Length: 379
Image (tube, rainbow, N blue to C red; front, side, top):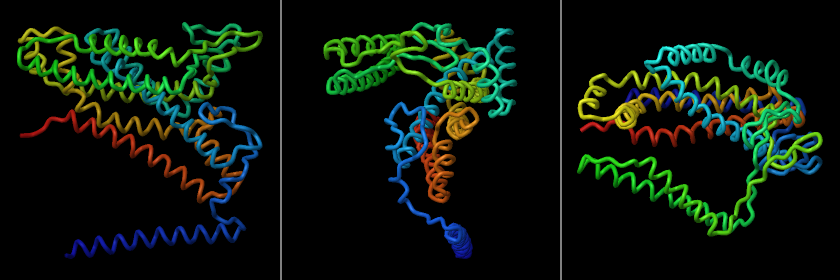
């Protein structure tokens, strides 16, 4: 009873403090002639947004609320690109860190110690201003990586174009069902292994099935998607898509920085697997690849996933440092430029906070579902 009363009193104090802060903020804003409302959402934004790949931007027509959506989508874009790249690179560096090869182990150690201990803002500015802007060539001398071209203006990439939206949607459904088929195939292969001890190349067969099935359906539907390749014109590239240099610099810096932390998570996860498990795997005749895939990694993931979730959240929040290089994400175009233009600090800052809270909670929710599935269940 006493504990419930104490908690109730603390809850009342917290609510009263928040209400007082809100009322004081509203009063101070009104004293300065600033009325807090959302009426400015439909007002036309008088500034230009240079990068808007998902929503059309027109100077003199785009409203403030559309500016918010553009900033949100740009933030999600760099977060998704960074999470994917940092996971792949961090996993590779972490495995190298645990390798018995002296050169690979020391290289990964130097990589982790350098990039993990250097401030992220300094890294962003270093890569953008000291490396990319200083050394990348003009478009005519672009660095070529297959169909990708890197130059002082950014990264030129192929651009997928939907020719037939209905057939494209059908094709996406077929891809979804191919993954469902692979899921049930993996379950059957696992059950067969426990019953007979015989293994199948599940990954290879699944990959071949997905590629063949989706390719056949793609041509059967008349090719609903085409790829527009970038072509060098007289002064710049024509066609394709462009990741502007600020986005490329931010993505590169976030990837390098976050991958160093993920690499340590991977190293710790691999180190947590007892030597007895590895010796037992060898004693039953498992090959090195089977031992890594079936014994080491599944057990290491239980240690790797929880701290890696925090790194994904940090990467998303660290994207707010994009103002250092001029990338137009939600903090730059909404919590900075829009706030200065309208003066609606309370609404704008609150919306920015809510956006990052939603991103963090959604990421944690999804990954914690996977984390619960791979945890050992007690009897």
